[in-house]
Length: 194
Image (cartoon, rainbow, N blue to C red; front, side, top):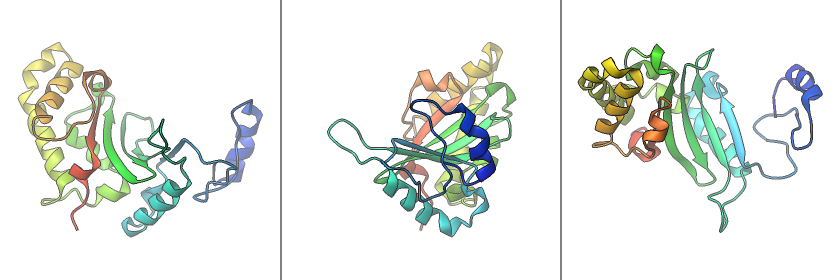
């Protein structure tokens, strides 16, 4: 589902069984509720006050939870132009679940470099007194403490930093994701105050 008609038209030649392209927006004009909605770099242009209503609207369109599934998933966030840095919030029908920080490790100077890619709901909250600011501060400290691991490569340094970070923050994934340059944290730990 794409808001720009020209993009939909350009994609149509690639349709096949199980893959179709439709014109639309936040109303998600589908005959059935989707398992996944990806909205990268969509809300960046919106006011922070508008984010919750858009999240609610999109989450209301997701497949509901049942005995076999927690329901559909909305992945909303911001990435750089070439995909080296990306931060996203994963939301289910019930609302926000987690925040994932992802980077191509060879391009990272320090974890707080990811702050410029925080989703709209968090980017203006990267200030003292807010949880996301404390998280990035602690991540930078763990990164600095893991400097000796840099001789084994950026991946080993990242893994060590995340392992140390997990002692104080609710990290929701493990070394398999960390090796990829990712770390996922509970939304509740990073949610804006107030």
